[in-house]
Length: 191
Image (tube, rainbow, N blue to C red; front, side, top):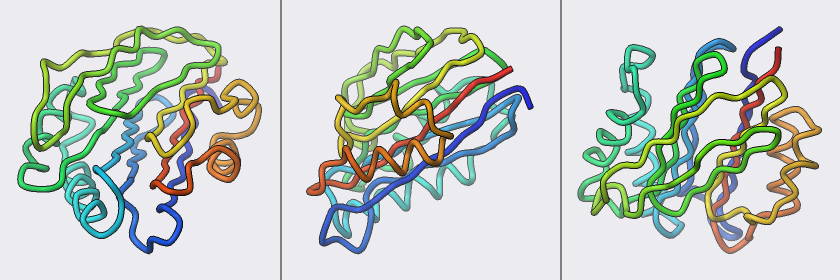
């Protein structure tokens, strides 16, 4: 089947019961939304901020939104008064990718090149003017969105050889920082 295949995994910091990281995967192979949220810190207060983010994302009117910008702006408002969070969202429509990230989240591309410039700030507290990622990918592209609980030196090219869910599980097993919550979401584009 052509289109997008998605997967994600998240683990709380060692010794924690609640997770301050979260993710959302929605859509179909032709049109999908993928979001990684990393609330500041870890533990119950971070988990509370993550739950606020997920509640907002679950209620967000997608796919009617034509851009990720209203999603990120709305998430910023929804997190006011909370601990705050970093987040990265990608809207995938066929080979077209639009994204926006705020804070210490990241994106790695394998067999794809996207102009990734994240926005400094903390959702719910302060945020600079949003920087939008736009581009087109070819079949075979592998996109990895992750929180700072996963090493940015993870072998993403090697991980991309496994199916999305398996790649996320392998990465969290071998490349996460156990002292922090960690989340990895993967989006694979195939013909």
